[in-house]
Length: 176
Length: 176
Image (cartoon, rainbow over all chains, first blue to last red; front, side, top):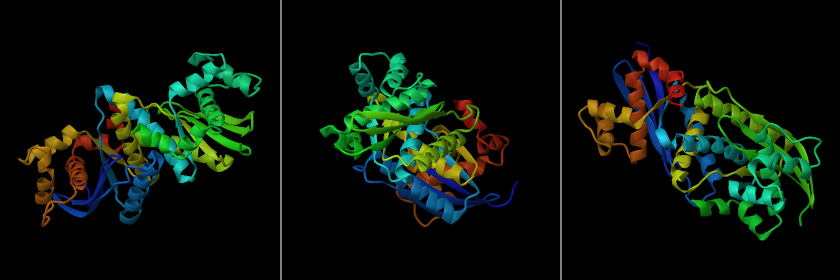
C-alpha cells in the first residue's frame, strides 16, 4: 500500500458538475472539501464549458490532488455521440478562453451552402473550397477542407440578420 | 457590411479535428492556413483532448481570429450524450492540463461499491458517503455527494491490481 493521497472525484454534467476532495491514508478516508459548479442554463454552451473548466482548475490549483477520478457515462450506442461532444467541447473551450465569439453550424447548413454553389455532396467540399478560395489544389486532408467550409459558411452568413444570432451564441441556446 | 475579419473554422472529432483560417473582406475570401490535429488513437482520452485543445489554442494565439465557427453535430436523440461528453471533456482536460493521472469509473462500478457497503440505491449515496467519511450530515447537493463517492471508489480500488489500469488510462482505452 502507498502513503496518503488526495483524490479529486468529479461527477460531470453540463447543468451541474459535482466535485469532492478526499484524503485517503490506508483504510482511513477524510472529506477535505466538496461542491458543485452550475453555470447559468441560458448561457451559450462555450461559456458554460468555460465556467466548469475554470471552477475545476481552481480546485486543482488550490488543493493539489494527486489523482483524479471521473464518473464515466459511456454506454454502447451513445459512445460516438459522447466522443463528438468531447471534441467539440475542447474546441469551444479554446475559443471561449480567448474571449472569441463562437458560431455553430449544423452539417445541413454547411451542406446547403455547398449545394448553393452547385456542388452538392460531401465529397465535393474540398473542390468547392478550392474554387472559392482560388487555391492551386483542393485542401487536404478532408477534415481541414471541412473546417474551411464551415469558416466560409460563417463568412457568407454573418452579413445576414441571422448572423448576430450565431455569433453571440443565442442560436445555440435555441438548440438546447 | 463590416470590414475584413479573420474566421477560424473548426470541424471537431476525437480522431482528427480539422481547422481552417479564412480572411473575409466583403465578397472576397482568402484561405490563410489550414490543418488537422490527430492525437494518437491509443493515447488516454484525457491526453487526446489535451492535444486537440493545445493545437487549437496555438492556432488562436498565432492567428488572432476575430470569430470562430464550429460544426455542430447535435441531432435529437444524441443531444444528451453529446452534452455528457462536453462536460466530461472539460473535467478531463482540467486534470490533464495539471499533469494529473485520471481514472474513469462507470456508474455501475460506483453503484457496486455503494452496494458492497450495504446501502444500494443511488439515493443512498449521500448517506453512504456521510458514514464512510464521518460527516455530521450528508453532503449536499447530490452531485457533490456523487463526486465524493467516485473519489471513494477510486480510493478503495487503487490498491488493487486493477488500479494501475485505471490510473494510467488503459482502462479507458479498452472502452473505445
